[in-house]
Length: 234
Image 1 (cartoon, rainbow, N blue to C red):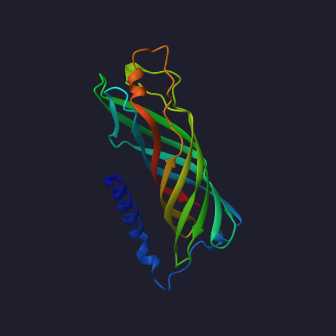
Image 2 (cartoon, helix red, strand yellow):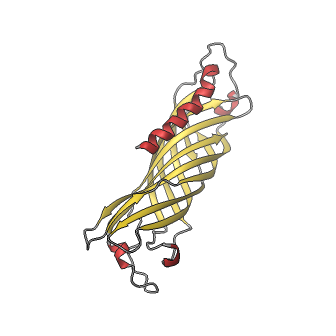
Image 3 (cartoon, rainbow, N blue to C red):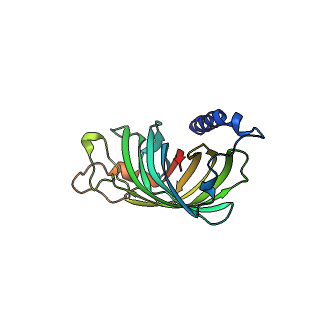
């Protein structure tokens, strides 16, 4: 909860830098042509927080929980297809880098690090409110397919990587943001939540590294969650 409040504070602080000019009734309308194009492109930069929703199996004495906040970063491409004055379809392929730490009780190694490099392929529907001077709030939602190119075929005990993740996952995404119209481009700040619908843990044992089965057996199911604060340049 604290990390969500922190990210929201960043969004509102950033937005306030533009709001004074945006609310003036006689302000000059910047970069109007972007909303008239049926297709336009851009790029995105952002920071993320990857998290796990862990459901313990109850097998044995081991218990697992997500600990430690490790911010990651996101880069990608923006493509926006105009469907209506207030609606557009967006495809934002990109890469997401992050790390999660699982804390175990009653096992020899108490913390296990899980690194991820996700190829993100989201298809999202964007609803834009009416433009007010040089800003325009919006809502966005949809689904994304993510491919983890960092997922391991084998355990790595030397680096405390004692669980493996599935390679692919499907996410439901929902967010909100504000478009700021600057003289030569449009800048959007966006806060988005993504929830994985699949069990992300690979429950198969690694026969080449025996003795670590308890780390996998301790969890019944693990879902991935990602919070992303993005800056879109269009």
